[in-house]
Amino acid sequence: MAHFLDTNILLYAISPHPAETAKRSVADALLNQDDGALSVQVLQEFYVQVTRPSRAGRLPHDLAVGLLRGWARFQVQETTMPVVEAALAIKAAHGFSYWDSAIIAAAQALGCRRLYSEDMRHGQVVAGVTIVNPFPVP
Image (tube, rainbow, N blue to C red; front, side, top):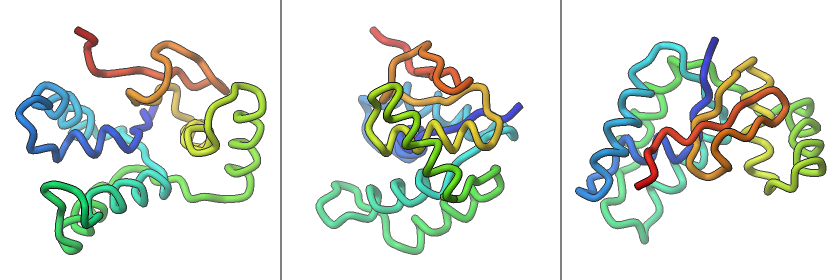
């Protein structure tokens, strides 16, 4: 069964910051598994974050695109009307932001049981998807 990766996992995987070494290792381990899953939204968010002009250590366009193409080996959920409708229902039922709801809906659409993210409550189950914070909390 595939596991879904939120944008923050991709961002930590390329982080050059010494304070994020442990998170980078965890992110790399998740990305080195063959059963990962992403969404178009996650890929878009990653690209926008790593190429924005104000980002320290900003990636050049070609390098960012190369990473996106490499991660296309995973299942990638497109943004479809059923995913949008599911996201709206998740938002209404659970109070997440629309964007977090869309991540959960994409994971659900791909049949993922686990969603790795540090941005949502660890252990919460939403629409059959368990949110897992893979980073140990000190």
